[in-house]
Amino acid sequence: MSGTGAGDLAAAESGESGPAAAEAGPAARAPGRGRPAARHWPGRRWPGGFAHDLLLLVGLAVLFTVLTKAFVAQAYLVPSGSMEQTIRPGDRVLVNKLVYRIRGVQRGDIVVFSGTGSWGPPPAASASPLLRWYHDVLTAAGLASNGTDYIKRVIGLPGDHVACCDPQGRITVNGVPLQEGAYLYPGERSSGERFSVTVPPGRLWVMGDHRRDSADSRDHTDDPGEGTIPESAVVGRAFAVIWPPSQLRSLPIPATFSQPGLRPGAAGGPAAGAPAGPESSGRGAVPGRVRVTALRARR
Image (cartoon, rainbow, N blue to C red; front, side, top):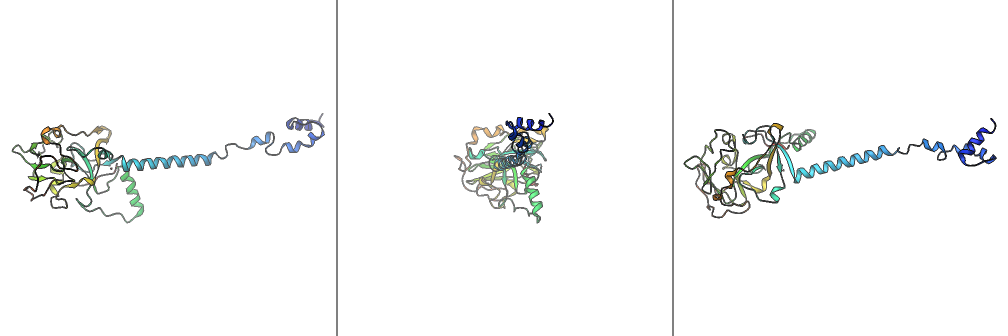
């Protein structure tokens, strides 16, 4: 029995019988035949495939984030109090970059815009490529400021006549007083400075909600554009505060900007019936009226 057991087992595994089967016993143990073939790990290539899939998913996620930031929406950190109480220092707002491809800028919109070339030069970049990269990452996440973007409320559209102030101390747009109590900083006046401006085509007149703490169109009448900003500089509309959680809320257009008497000025075109030509101003004659990433930390 002991003399034939090995040959019988080999024959059984190989499907052969007789002396030939016994001689085939060693061959039955060759890789790829019989039980020894099971020792090969069928998933040996899995780690490489997983790494490839993971890199693909990460790449797609990065591409989606970049495209979203560039064309759809982006978070911005607000470092100053120029928009209090509507937006407080440290709040992060979500900015819709797509909305102005669908509709024009409207009075009362809170917009983020680039001040480069109109409200100041770009800040000096760090000499270290690593620090620049780190800052760019924080800026893209809305955790740092790029030093060139600002956030203000649109008061006047192209063709609008914006003035301060009527006998009750209110700013007027095309002769209609704005009721700004709903969004101005508590106890704040509409403006401590008098002005009378007709916004030129393609430009906007913007102001902060905390008027005494906001360096806005009123403070840039000696700059290129004489206080106004170009529509082309607008990055997008801030439509919600998304951080901190306790401040989570939307940023709608205040009701005062829906008054029929304002007349529908159009971003990119003059408003019907708006006064033309320069107006005298307490700051001098002004010929016309005027994307977290963090915003510039200034008033």
